[in-house]
Image (cartoon, rainbow, N blue to C red):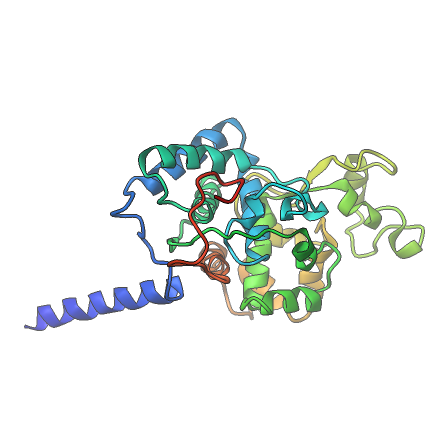
Length: 324
């Protein structure tokens, strides 16, 4: 009797975790009966593309982030057309769409009309992070695809010059807190940025005629070499100059050493509200320790449930780049 009771309690706890993780709509293993090979196909597709081009990992992560911050994680960013999200400057250099299209084509062949583009993007992003050394997390699925994509709504995407107060407000409006902000910014450990978005820090910062004084003087020459004054602004630079291909805490070490590439990233160290969180990820004595891989996964689940569309909301697109 005691064993039966314990089993019941464990099973009940499992159900509670799934419901909480899924925000009452999505759940882990949503396709276990309707399309049992869905997650395997997505993972193998990501692996195939990653092996030929590892840059699809930060690409997918950025697409997912930009998608979730506009109308929630509904794959609206994938819709092509006039004045859609894809036509705006923040989304002009996104990469990795071919991975989503490839997985969708395979899934439509065996499970037509079952797996949403939103779930493909969310699962593919998790798998790509894992392939760069990140810790695996369970992804609640069951999202539906959105049918609206407006260029005007991308104006609220976090910007590379935003101070922490502005970033915090943007995250808070979507139900994400300061720890989520810092954890998700940590995804820049495998990210890149074009010279055009940060070269203003290198030569004439705030019309001073010199560089941003917060940049470590020993780091400045290498940034200027990669992004010469009046050079090609589309050249891309790794946001983690320690181990740009590995999902680790090197990005946070860069911030501590004033080697953040984006001004918005470096603010996470200079602002007193977020510095203890960065220190926590670095294991600094005297602050609450935080495991980056674990907390990143938790924050990704929270972000993945922003403005969740489930049930009869939205649709399941046949082709991810256009509504049905």
